[in-house]
Amino acid sequence: QVQFVESGGGLAQPGGSLTLSCTISRLRLDYYAINWFRQAPGKKREGVSCISSGAVNTLYEDSVKGRFTTSRDNTKNTVYLQMNNLKPADTAVYYCATDTLSYCRNLTLYGMEFWGKGTLVTVSS
Image 1 (cartoon, rainbow, N blue to C red):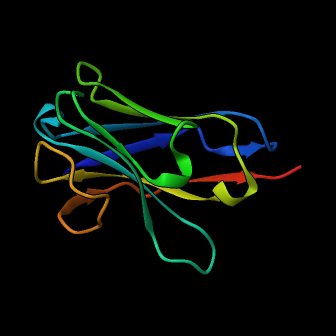
Image 2 (cartoon, helix red, strand yellow; image 1 turned 180 degrees about the vertical axis):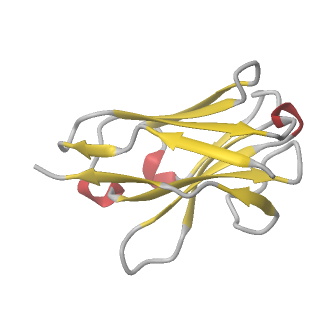
């Protein structure tokens, strides 16, 4: 069974930074694109970023472009989401998810196979 360990969430002030980590075990991670999604209270889950299997390509939702950076270390089976210049609108539970493909789709939930349990990010002064 695929297992996830997500960490790095917490409370940040507006303009602050957090780095999320997602370590996935029992899966050959270097075969698959990995996505980050988020879900704010009362809202639908939305795609935030994607990184292809070999980290050649990345994709970001418009509101996080220039502020968030996703990366991966396949030797550690870990994917990261560096979040800078955080805004209150970034408050949400953040989830990592594995795609069935090696390349990024259009930040859609479709095609995601395995999901982490999420980590809460709260941006507030």
